[in-house]
Image (cartoon, rainbow, N blue to C red):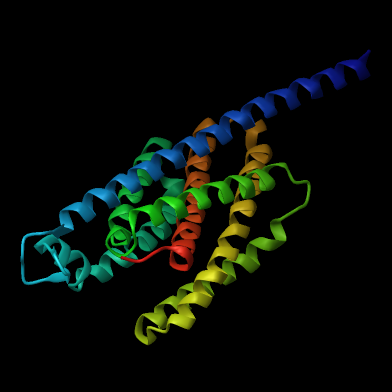
Length: 255
């Protein structure tokens, strides 16, 4: 009888964890999706304000001119601030996540998503709208498959984490160097390697989000789990955005 009670209790706990895990993952993906929408809207809105058909001193191409806002965003020293702002915000978010509430963390994430949209708004002036949509759909399908793999696989992907993060650091260094070299061959190599690294991180981060929830669910700290969901959404959001940007560099049709 005692053995039956133990088995029954274990089954109830497992069912509770499974139900809680589904809710947790839904929170992660829904938060990430809202962030993606805010990024897309911010990028589209800013790019619309940055370009005009009215002649100005800043000609982008025949028949298109940068507004004063566009010049400030893409041609003045402010562009360096916008380029690195999302990186600084992401690092800061990781550093302060334990000291803020779940509600504050979610608000910060949405502010970050808008800042990212402003930072990448230049793509609407460089690539055709059709190619942006096509690459976005390709990224979405690839992301869904990779995240599903990370969720269901029994293989431990934790060993990949250190290797992939070292790859991210290497990519950042190479990208900074290429800002000055402006080498198309180097940019192609960076983009190809970047796609592979963030594809791996998508599967790794999904499994890590799942494992983190299972490890802490029994403690019942809903505030902590709420912040963990926001942090997981941020990680997957960054995986998606970076994979999208690198694929766009490889396959996007330029204006």
